[in-house]
Image (cartoon, one colour):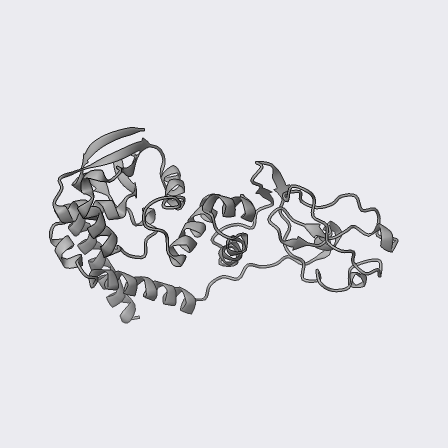
Length: 293
């Protein structure tokens, strides 16, 4: 890890490394006024490229001020390590993340570490466990991450991952034995998978007890899960995919209409502007092809 003075034009603004919805112009102006007191940006050196991982507003301030170089903390690593860093950036400094930006951070973290429990990720990202569980469910249903057979708790231990059973809230007689279910039990520590003290299913008092999974979702007993049919993940429809893509394209257009964008665009490097124009041309050409279908 080194602090270096890097040419501003050498930094690569990879879209995968940016969680922000848009640049906040007030923050950029504030950073311009305090330029000499700003901490260095964070850059990951990956396969010879200098990827900006933290400091998009400081970078914008440098571009607007016409600064040729910028102080940067340079870390050598992989793209996965850089993305992992990005997902946890701005938790303790800088402009706080918006709700949609926090969601993007959770999605990124889940794609990188889907084996970690909801509680584990919630503690890392300072968000609610329920939000992590909700986004995990959506990513699983859209086949973006696997269900997984284990979860890694915040204690570093591995626990079995069990899906919810559709008969979980029905009387236990629908599953086995004819007895009513006992109350759920959570082991101390919060990350124990389930209580294994239950006996056979022949008598109601010996029925395995319902308990809490490592990521705080209720699960039925293992026998019921073994007899339950597999749950097929729901793939997104073409209409849903097109709606998402349309929102993303409109978002990019809105960025170009933001106050101060034109002035900043004029001072951007020729290489960066060329990359942008090339992407726009490709999108327009593809849209024209699709229009003729």
